[in-house]
Image (tube, rainbow, N blue to C red; front, side, top):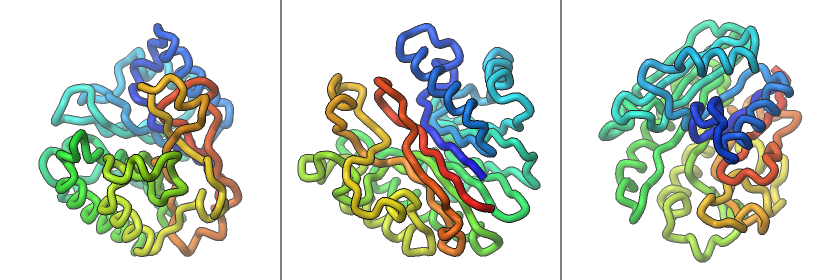
Length: 272
């Protein structure tokens, strides 16, 4: 089973591909389609509340023929956040859960979960703690609620879950840990909550397969022209699996996106 997960930062920008960045984004999407994954998980879709437009759906159906599309859009803020799954096999069930998160987080389209015979496949776009950590307290509540949600799935069958978790777990997971100790995504509190998630029975697949390898990142800041050139990045995107299927992981890698900064996709091969 091959799965690919990516924070695309706007489906529409990819489909329209009128700018250089949009062209690069569309090129990455084409690369994903060429790999013919069983499941594609997308975060930060920024779709309208009613999902894909006719033009967007037609463009994606041309790239991913015979796939099933499931979108969860933000109803709290226009063209914000949002998640999507594209699956070759039609799931037994698809859920767009409210997890009891604070504020408007449950209305921001942050989770899609598909149930298959042998597992759940879920994707998440975790809320950012924000500038000056304004949303950090709410982020803590989100992390607790999300862990409870995943644990509920895991009690039924194994879970494969991916997404932009908006946290670099350990110092090895970003280029400049000391300079970012109190930055959103690398606070002690966020890292501690991610540890709690793993300790609840889940494996960080990439770190399990590359335990001491530095320089593996999935995000490079757009505002810095040299962040990708210098590999000055963060690893904030993950594929996690229930511990009881961790030995079935065959490969996990960051997909090369060339000069495009921001997030890169992750590709997971697992025997299911």
